[in-house]
Length: 282
Image 1 (tube, rainbow, N blue to C red):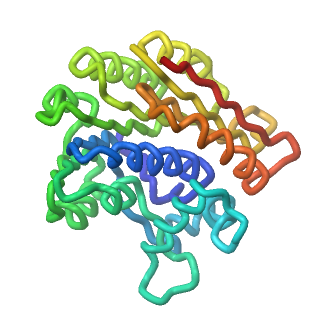
Image 2: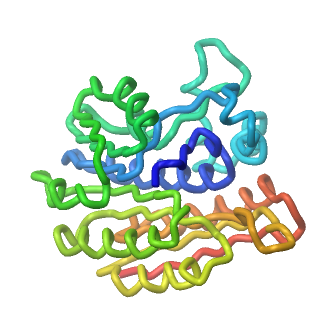
């Protein structure tokens, strides 16, 4: 199914958590001179115009990145992430009109000797992605299944890799596919840093998802979840989201412990907003 387009959801509260974690992981990867390969299995269009009809139809960014835009009391990691978003606006602009997807954020953090592998199946988003990023040094854009393609990308010659997995989970089978992709990736390169995003929704598969990831992780992991929105009377809606990071940087949990309370207060849409943070350190 290729109906999902992230343009309708760009910059929402789930993107804030996902991209905050992504930035912190890539900062850690760049702390060593040795190059690494970043693989984005569901890259989307790469960047998004918030004044476009898709973003305006849902307005989800207004309860996400827009709540952080004018604040001057941001903690360090959130401030770092927001500064990258600011760099994506038109020169001299003071208003928020563009939101960077994971490919654009990553491109700002990757070094000339690092490698970027972007996968997207949706024909419209792939065309936009390819047009924006295929000419970037070290970047390759593919119209292919990112999960199935991992076997061709692991292990990289540098023996350093980070993987971002964030399918839409519109299909229930996406949960099992993600777990299978994680298992296969770790069998090929057990040292890969794998960032898995997931939505907080009322599904049995979602409840069991992170338990299955815990059993696969060979070493350290960090699991952060941000809950900011109430579901409707039938239990539908995106209450929040989570990031499960396998082989997580040793600094990640400590950083998120300082950032998540702020994000709860800044993004909360009801009195029951909360976060959870768990880790296994090795």
